[in-house]
Amino acid sequence: MSDTRKIIIDTDPGQDDAVAILLALGSPEHLDVLGITVVAGNVPLALTERNARIVCELAGKTDVPVYAGCDRPLRQKLVTAEHVHGKTGLDGPQLPDPQMQLSDGHAVDFIIETLRKEDTGTVTLCPLGPLTNIATAFEKAPDIVDRVQQIVLMGGAYFEVGNITPAAEFNIYVDPEAADIVFKSGADIVVLPLDVTHKALTTAPRVQAFRDMGTDVGRMTAEWTDFFERFDKEKYGSAGAPLHDPCVIAYLLQPDLFSGRHINVEIETKSDLTRGMTVADWWRVTDRAPNALFIGDVDADGFFALITERLSRL
Ligand code: RIB
Ligand code: CA
Image (cartoon, rainbow, N blue to C red):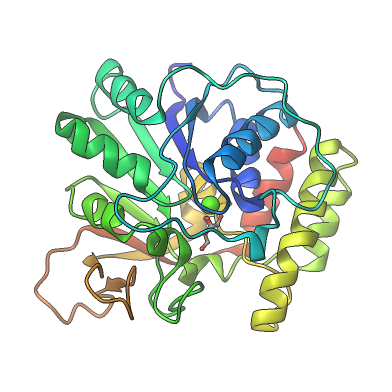
């Protein structure tokens, strides 16, 4: 696959992670998923790695290697989100136990080896959860940072502020030290924060379009959405739940659906009160050098049309 974009998806499934993985696997003419690396986040690692294999099987793509990674943050105690995603992390539909095996080796080593093996500047990292695996790989093998084509991640918030604390978004909050390493790495970073994901809501017509696919993938996606949107609808009184992680993959497929600013983003790691806050200099009031494209807006109808079209292929 010469003209496809090579990616590694780093993930903590999570229903929204699952839809992001399906979107990537439903776009083989654009994306070459070299592997899926799994991290502890929404639920513990033993469940996130199981969930990643379930999603690959649902997509009929059991040739995509799945590697288990870090089971806890660099320094913090693991915080999980069963209150949003359920005790399995993929609550909603009944799911079969996965038959495909985990690939041998640690996710961090797969990230390092892949970046060293592939031509420099040809592999994009797509973190959808806490940044523990990515930061650990950068610390273990600093030579790989310059070999990364781009990091396109879901995490952080500015105008939307926090979803796990008043100040912080979950992925960054769980491992702020890892996020600090990644945001200071010098890599080319695109951030899909709550500011944009909260504009991509799973309204009833959009979920019905998933059901109308008439496939297992469509039915599962609708049932995942039905489950995890109850939390956000109750909390925000919104017309649906933000479909966070698929924004990362959609950005790779159709970047024109999104808009943002190249600004400085720093991570709070010192204060218990604001731990994990992404201090985004959206108004450029400091002289801190821009280090990330911080996305603030999305064409939500175009986003859901893309997801529905690609998932209907699976
Ligand atoms: O804050 C939203 C993020 O946290 C998403 O990636 C969701 O899957 C959880 O990991
Ligand atoms: Ca996630």
